[in-house]
Length: 355
Ligand code: 1CP
Image (cartoon, rainbow, N blue to C red):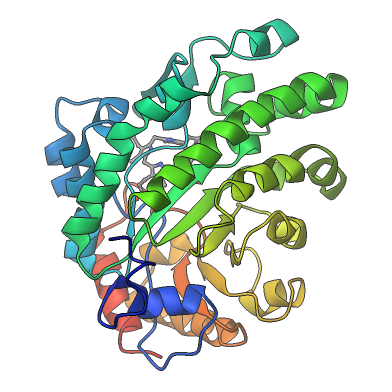
């Protein structure tokens, strides 16, 4: 019953123009769009259903996950749902002490900085596979709820997830993480390989339960130089993609401020590159193999400008993206929590009038 098994038949999820674009196929359909962080804090209906439940409790309640995943699709008529979860959910399911503090982000009980800290991480085996069951159920419910709108699954890339584990929580410059790579590369490698195994299995579970595409978030990779990325990070992100490379769904890779890493991030095993707003899509394309589909990259700041400025930016992004073999519109990074939901709805309506 998986979407890609039904792809031979017409009228199913696999025919969605958004998926055709992620596959790099030509289509004359109106522009396709979804927004990173479209679910969540900007929506009053999200705040209402989350009331009294912590973020991580919500992530293991399949009914609640499916409802939150569907909310922005209903409200904005975006062309895909993004699975409601978090990049630290796999660590939680593996048995690691982690919480998401409101207004802060993921905080780990025991920062991982030494060989002994890595030795103490739980094994990734049958117990973890069993712990993924609520995720499988939540994906299946979300797919059913979304109907002909595709669901995009996701995971955090090893560098970005490990940065929270090493720093203990959110960090501006990830200094301790980069210091660990340089001073104890073998400890770093064991930690990153552990995260890759978790994230890879998390992605695979989502695809097998019905997700039609996946995105690997290496949000903070931009803090790495090209040599550091090549030496310490690329192989671990490649290990995540290797978990799902046999499944015929598009694999999107995204980082913030990572214009210098587009080629090596693509070479890690992505089929589509997510691009932030700091580089034009046609410039991004020049660094990638011919025909690479792109996703992006409206500056989130235009959500706080006039409609005229917003639509001008949307037109410019579409024009720059026309050079790619497929282009799915997104923001350059996530929806800010204080964005006006009506502005997003109107932006989707505008994009659906464009080609
Ligand atoms: O209580 C709450 O509502 C907490 C806010 C929140 C939400 C709604 C967090 C804490 N995570 C999420 C959901 C989430 N996280 C989604 C699904 C919803 C959607 O996109 O619509 C996704 C895809 C993520 C992925 C995620 N978590 C990333 C990568 C994406 C990105 O924005 O770069 C990262 C870096 C995280 C860590 C994280 N989790 C939460 C916060 C506030 C953060 C960032 C902390 C920081 O600034 O370092």
